[in-house]
Image (cartoon, rainbow, N blue to C red; front, side, top):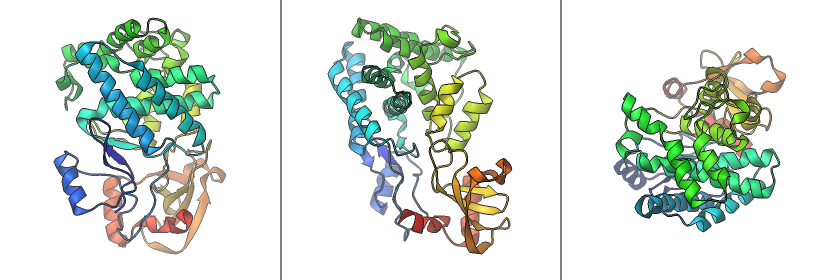
Length: 366
């Protein structure tokens, strides 16, 4: 099987790069690293489908994680930070996004529990930079926004590791400590970058909500800096779609529903809609139910991420169709898409029909 996501170790080196064929040796190493599963492009080893293209190069992501891990360690050990490597990788991230903006955000990476903060910071920086590029911000501002994304969680070095990785609910005292990390980040960044208040502002405000229900200062609306509002969206999306000690990763469609429906008042709606116009809510290869049967997502277009082009291959009873049918959900009634097939349902469905639906993407991939 072909890996669809990369897996990184604490210093950003890749345990396993996406697009690699899994072998028993790799699987054993992944188990020893504490991973009980990875995302693959197909359950059929004979289908060598390519993973979705990323909006930054693999080497950029690896270098960024390494630089963030090193920077955080230096701050923790010596209270100092060399900004040059982070500024340089911010520029590289930005160049990658500008060059590869044609790629929708789809699957990204898998993080080991003890590396979460570093890989998360990089993904937040990438997603924030993407939103900034989409808004046509000046390059100088884009570089600051990207750097702000890389450093937004710097204050977490003051939070005990056992709290950051606790699998259960936090106690009131633990939650108070966690809520202190934005201000801790602000204080450190203010000392390190005395002439750039924007970085400390992003760190301080990235957990504020538009309706005033966030923390630490319960700011509302325009009181929250625009770039902090951008980072807030990237931060929550990446957290929702990542594995954590206390939860499994949510699918992009569930993350979309939580952020647009279940969290009213949390986000800048204009920015949120722009974000999800460029993030695949139903990534290519997702199995969905439609009113006329089971289908696989074949193509997702910018601005139409809620209505992908799907290929219907089975009826409601799960019986394979003699002739597959492509549907552009943009041209269909809203109720045509009934939902995403859950992992457990998909597992039983594939065993029942004895075929991996990914096979229906072959002509599309080619």
